[in-house]
Image 1 (cartoon, rainbow, N blue to C red):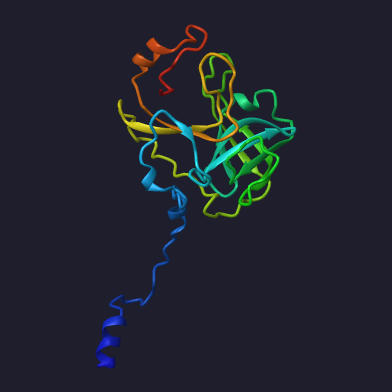
Image 2 (image 1 turned 180 degrees about the vertical axis):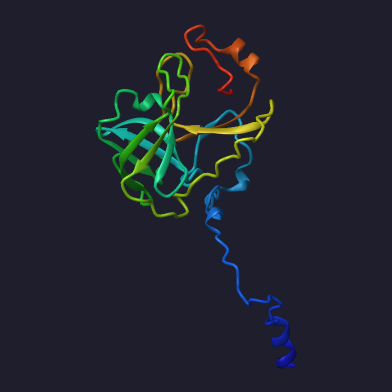
Length: 217
């Protein structure tokens, strides 16, 4: 009957104060990749990313020229490397989100541009050796979350970094260790985490840049 169905749907509360606890679900917005397609499978050897595959990836421009990548961690804050802003904190910076190509003059229909209003370098950043090479950036205005612009989920501080764990690296960085060849399209590749000892054996830049215990490879 209609009455019995209603009773199933609208049970009386057993709470003495008859109050409903509010639940904040905003954290569910992070780490979601609406445009990712599982049919493509794993990334082997790396290659061009698809539009919207990494909605937290941002491109940073200083005085109109591309400089670095960044990661969206909230609607108004970005995480980036410290060396990008060393002695350049007073320059005019703009973040570009929701785009795939860093150099194209034809904007993506999904992109959002935001001026950077505040740059905070790690207080113990050391340029020689890239010690504590991290910064956070505040955008002048919040971004609007969409399928193409969305924040990443930050790991718990105690999350273990286990050797052999596969991670995805994303960015517009140089394609080869030797030579300065940079892509126009966002690149993605899967790489394993390796131990600090093994990383030190493999790096080409020792002793100029030492891999410290505060870094991972």
